[in-house]
Length: 439
Image 1 (cartoon, rainbow, N blue to C red):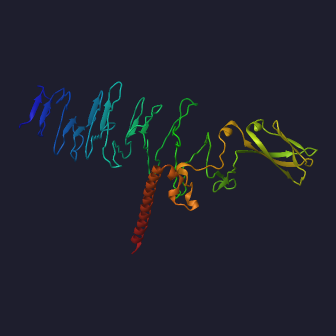
Image 2 (tube, rainbow, N blue to C red):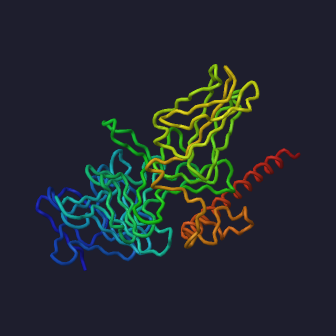
Image 3 (spheres, helix red, strand yellow):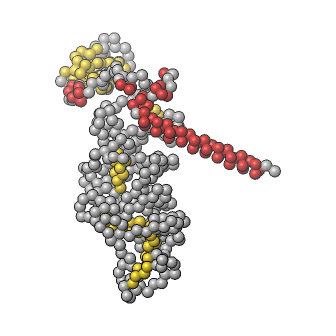
């Protein structure tokens, strides 16, 4: 059957040297237009080549190496452009290859553009999906050797939104550059072998009192963790979390140990000075100083006016400096912010220390539970099982979140393999160099 051709009279003045099934030729309007109320407006089908090919200006890219559903080819504009008032601008599906593929070599142009022009309502400018059960399958992928792989821009909403299976039902209270939404999985996941898995940067706001957080975590569920950091104890020199600058904790801080580290005062360029915290089963405040006794061997020590409002159950220690003072004692306990030392010698210097237990409203509302029962999945688990001669399967974090533990195990194994490959590569290079030097 011969091909079908159509012209608007004037024609475009172009001559095609290839064969065709349908040719539409127009000087100013559409070459071929297809409309339908219920089916395909234009349907192209090919067993071995391109189903539909569109060329704008003059061809820019070489022929695709594989079979494609739609090939859009343009030197200076979009390869494929789709607009929609109510549905997808461009929709592509593929069982084994790309659903929609776009490419451009022109500066500041796009390979694929998706646009949803409806003034209101939900719509999609471009959508990518995969039905593959492979955990490495990608719905939308962006690759750039030096630039941005995927860029999402919005004037008032989310720049990029990702939904896993079903949404969580939660929405960001303000516009976000990236919004990852998942009911049961991970909202946003980032990984890197050499740099940051996820990097958040905030430049601050115009209002100096308005918070600008580079990274913010919020949870409302029971037994939830807002921000979780994990550092494999086999890895040396790292941290589960590192803060450079002021840190404020408006709540309890629970730790297995702690202290301070500063540059060593006597060798600050080459050494650190480390000290451990003083621990207690009570929330204690300590106040101390030096008192000089008067002619009667006494002294009245004044404390800040808030000391009695913050503390209870005061304990005292006195130490005479420069000589013995067997009669040294507390002559009067703290009353109206003062206590009295007696029984010393004239002009004697006395080192004093007062310890109080916190009684402020926060401390009363959050008492220290010294001996606490492990309940639920924590029972039978250990914070550091290896120190008690127990296997890693008894780790507390593994009991609390086994899915995360499995994920960390996988990442640890991948890191071990990567280190092993690096070591083998180093030995190979050193061995190779040695062999080259051998005559």
